[in-house]
Length: 253
Image 1 (cartoon, rainbow, N blue to C red):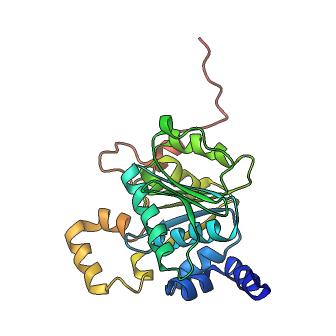
Image 2: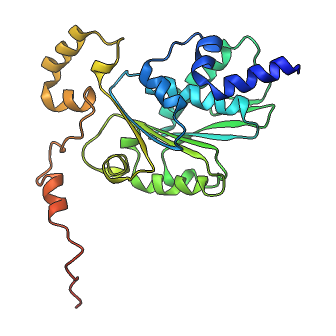
Image 3: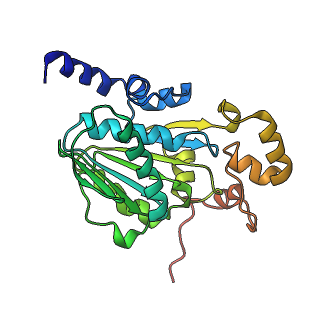
């Protein structure tokens, strides 16, 4: 490889916005550009339906695989079918490249590049995903629908690699790790909240139609990224947390 090609690759590795534009012919929204360029290793994308969260994370995954040899990228969703949808976005972008890397492994579940990088899609089932380690990037799609046990099982996969973790989802009630990390996960997380009104591709007329059809509860959750109480919840999240105190000693029988 010539020095100029090496320099170009370095620039693209450091500038995913340029990579998306020049290599994939995708113009990122301003918020998407913020996501791909922000240096934090912990990101939460609390996004409206059809905001483009899967698109932006698929670009992050592809850049990592192409320009950082021997990177293990794991794509996790509540089901294998959903993981495969995110994986397909990665492979569709890969096909857009005029100079495609050689794939040693290429199937519906995973791809291994000739530079040693590997992208694997996984189902959100705690009992079937153990065994991976040293992940450079872990992306959890539809994170609000992934159970807590699975989340706790995959986090150690980043223990020795110092890898990055991205959670992306629309809210699904005031429960689970996606809500907890958003509300009280601390300063290690960089949070992005993108409502439907922040997405230029979604017409205002469509959103008004959806507001009338869904009602405020589901519209606020699906399009405004609000964490709502569940429909059948007896006590609110605030009532439950207010009832908990670490100053009261437990009874010993």
